[in-house]
Image (cartoon, rainbow, N blue to C red; front, side):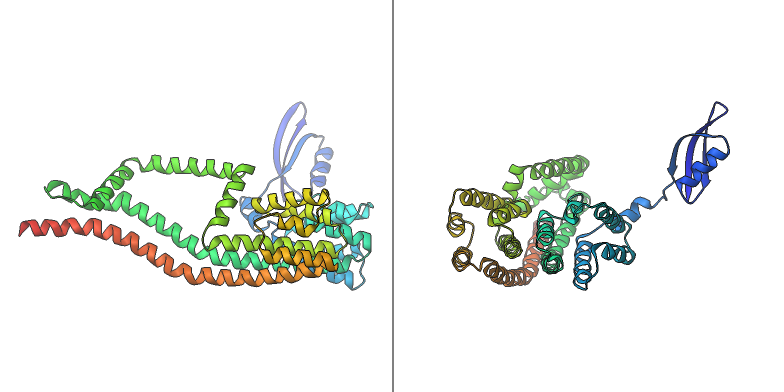
Length: 399
């Protein structure tokens, strides 16, 4: 590896680059040669930032880490031994660094759950709460196995949703780009032919001429304006009000709204089942669900349920007071609460919503292709009619 250093020798500041294995070797070199070190830095490769993209710790890495850790703990290995084995098995430097830091925390006497709290971007509140429950009950391996199952189901569901949405998004983006290029650079040259002839143009052609003329003249401003508008919208969406507005719109959308709704219900009911089964109190479970629910509408609903439960209202009645929950969920919560098998009941209803989500995704994938064809046909038809109709009128006038 190459290191750059800045040092002082004979009252002169020197900057050089040398080959060394570690920063300590560079420091020893400077001391042996009577340099007073100021700074030492490692020269990173040109493509280090590019490689960092592929070295980024993903959700799948956390799933595999949890599963392997649970299996080794169940086999009787200690937590420290598990970390040592996992460190050798991992290929990503980012994941290796996380395991090493967690291992150091555990070796110094800190609980595993406390070490995980230093990585909130990778380990959710649900994850940490379950680990705490495992530490308190002594059933760490069993709880981690349940957690791994939950994470794998979540990963599978996310894959289904992404698979259903990727195709239409790519098609619409490509279609929009092609339409923009045609209207901006191709159509104006065709429409210029009509200016020299005194013919009555149809309204569709006049609209197309206006739009294409505007874009041909101001397309840089349109792109810059679109960039700033999208940035402003993105910033607004990150605010609580913007997130609530976006999630409300998504829930009311035809076809896609059902997928968004069911995905929130699958995650919340499964989380409720796992946490209660792990011995976490109802109130703490609901608070964790509020923190982990991605949809703002459902997050607000669960926040209201927390307040109701704190006032002494039963969980079933608290769910019944929120309009966004389907009747089957409200009924199952009441039954589970009355029978004392709320965790098992929530797991069953979670499985039901999971099946509903598969049907909804299949419906979307079935409808999306003809919908795309219809939209493409309308767009192409508008362009053809707008360009061809004046030519037909022109030839008719010559006759």
